[in-house]
Length: 321
Image (cartoon, rainbow, N blue to C red):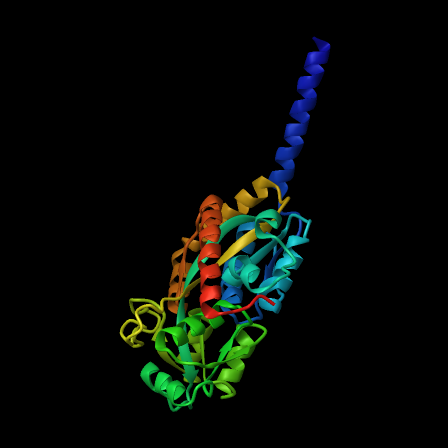
């Protein structure tokens, strides 16, 4: 009987310690490793969520930008994190496209990560410099037809969704254009504003501020309906290319081995944040829609997206490097 009671006491003590450890989390600042430079759409979502999350957790949320290699630098850094306080804030390229574009990816998504939640769904926008002679998509396509590969488009990296969006457009319009890859959205946008490239088909949160301040001109949105963020901009359907539909997203992953209660706490807090009216309004103005899926829903979504973008890479004729 004494042995039985001792066993019960030991089990209760262990359970109490585990519960205390879980309730004490976080014990240090939480880190978002962001697969993009400052100013990109992922970074914008990370900073908006991070500020609110810091208030909810009572700890600072540090945004750690690790741009480059189409999100693989960030992915590798997050996969190796073992502190239970590091998370990956990323996009389709890191989780669903790279394995189709590169022969060697330094992480395996199902093995190295646990889904937390999809945070946003993002509208894609095709923009040109404010000084560009092209006022419509039809004019841009006409120029590309007149001089094959003379029109240069920027992307956030080889195999990035912004490249695939432009390649999809080129295929639909039956034109050839020259791809100029950058290490992230922000440097690509900087060169676009400077006139070094002709256009980018990128994420709206990163581009809308530059459209509104007059540095860029929007030609089309990559979805069947117009966006409230830029209501005067026509859709690809209105421009005569209904097959060109491109939407992006952002999401949060935890390194494999992160305790399940920590993943749940992060999920629950972030979903609450995404439901806040001021957060929803800020995201909507930027051209992003809050999501807040369950970990299982996000896992299923990643699997579907991986298949979809694998087909898109083949269609674009991108050979794995």
